Amino acid sequence: MRTVLFIAFLAIALWAAPYWSIALFQFPFLDSALAAEISNGAKIFNANCSSCHIGGGNILIIEKTLKKQALSKYLKDYDTDSVQAIIHQVQHGKNAMPAFKSKLSEQEILEVAAYVFQKAEQGWQNS
Ligand code: HEC
Figure 1 (cartoon, protein in one colour):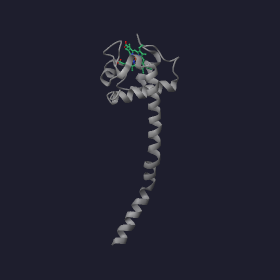
Figure 2 (cartoon, helix red, strand yellow; figure 1 turned 30 degrees about the horizontal axis):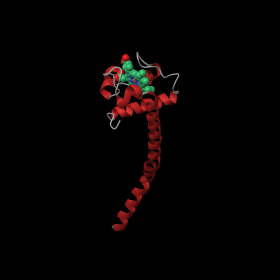
Figure 3 (cartoon, protein in one colour; figure 1 turned 60 degrees about the vertical axis):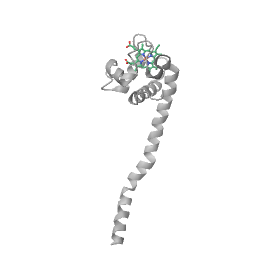
Figure 4 (cartoon, protein in one colour; figure 1 turned 30 degrees about the vertical axis):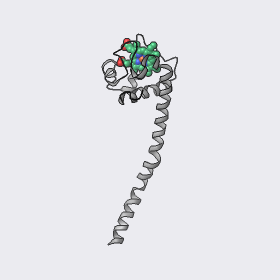
């Protein structure tokens, strides 16, 4: 009986092995790629956006913050395609907000938009 159980256990463990290796090797890699992108986004944000949007706020138009509720209310298409909506605003600017298309690369705009999205989801804690 014990042997049968042991063999069954071994069979399951072996069958699951590929999944374990995916969990162990692939996800940490994805995590660190994403983490790198977001921490780069933080640097870009601090250098280009925080003068007006410190802590996710808006010093020029108080209600148009980068918080989830404000984005959802004021930023076109935020609810359907969040990161793309932020990218669009950063590229083209709006009223008193300057356009960044000629100042930041496409990659940098993507990174800063991913950062803003992540912070909005987290409620701009610790910033
Ligand atoms: C000179 C000040 C200024 C800078 C610098 C600036 N913004 Fe803005 N931002 C604004 C203003 C003003 C608005 C509101 C525009 C409007 O709707 O009239 C705004 C709105 C936004 C919105 C939409 C928020 C909402 O609630 O409508 C996003 C997203 C945004 N900014 C992201 C950024 C990012 C990312 C950067 C840096 C790459 C940046 N901004 C740099 C002034 C600025």
